[in-house]
Amino acid sequence: MAALADLYTLPQEHLDLRDTIRQIAVERIAPRAAEMDERAEYPHDLRRLLAEQDILGLPFEEEHGGTGTGTLMLNMAVEEIAKADASTALILMIQELGTLPIKLHGSEELKRRFLPRCATGEWSPAFALSEAEAGSDPGAMMTVARPDGDEWVINGSKAWITNSGVADFYCVFAVTDREAGHSRGITAFVVEADRPGFSVGKLEHKLGIRASPTGSPVFEDVRVPAANVIGEVGQGFKVAMSTLDRSRLGVAAQALGIAQGATDYAAAYARERRAFGQPINSFQAIQFKLADMETKCAAGRELLYQACCKVDRGDADLGKYSAMAKLFCSDAAMEVTVEAVQILGGYGYVTEYPVERMMRDAKITQIYEGTNEIQRLVIARTLR
Ligand code: COS
Image (cartoon, rainbow, N blue to C red; front, side, top):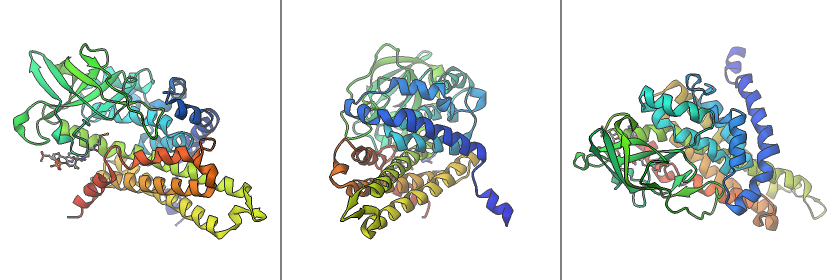
């Protein structure tokens, strides 16, 4: 029995690296979070810090210059950073999301060209799937690519794209065969940001994750060589779906970090704050809220870790588990941050304290990389 108990603990190297990242997040990232949120400024210096500390190497294998430490370690890092600041966590999440299509389906040449420079943090990627009228239903996209000799010519625009204007290249999905039917004639391409005809388009003003740019890149007769096709022509929908099956764990980890950060802050506040002559954490009304918040974080973390291990093993049900982890952790983040604001009362509602930002940041985790309604659909399909 002792051996089984040992199996159910994390390796010491994971815990050590988590502690290092936690310290960086507490000392270097958390103090910047409020100001970055207010100014809606992308933190180029924090991105350099993550690169210098090899944190941006976490999504990559050693052969591509990464740490080779797997999906669980990556998402433990995302949680620690998101506890301090959800926008900064997104820098690491997109380093994975924007390169997964190449990692999973790209040619060896594409992998060599793009992955090592992302692992060092020199380059940032973006994942350009959604459009103004194709979010939950990406098969309805309007962006097109037509062949012209050894090149493809891309026309259209995308929407809600994280890292717009910051990314060095975009993984772009476009219709290459309109006759093939819904979601079938789509192809994935790498489009470098310096290609003629590419422009960043408009940037959004957002409720949360304000230090991360979100925009609508435009493609006007953008030419890319055939070598920039990711995977097979016509298989782009599967490239996108298999990417999201894995990247949704980043959203789960980000949501968990927001939830745990809000829980920790509210618990510390309730120890100090006094009412009716006592610390407010001596009242059951507050104790019960904190107990539920901590329990939701712990339950979400177990589901997240299980799903991460399934991705690393390549289990057949990894997509179902990543959808469940994303669904559970993001709903928990919303519920927990609303309660954190309630515990702080008026102080919870003002920008001098971090929990209102956490509540605003939590909302997007129920929406992006597939709304929670889509996650329920993905899970329910496995039960038919
Ligand atoms: N992995 C690999 N292939 C997959 C897949 C997956 N997870 N899910 C579906 N496919 C394949 C199917 O097998 C099918 O292949 P064939 O054409 O060979 O039969 C093809 O893709 C189409 O699948 P399906 O008919 O299920 O597609 P739908 O249009 O019904 O879409 C949902 C299914 C809703 C699950 C999908 O559109 C989705 O996930 N939407 C949300 C997208 C999203 O997350 N957007 C957020 C923006 S990205 S940040």
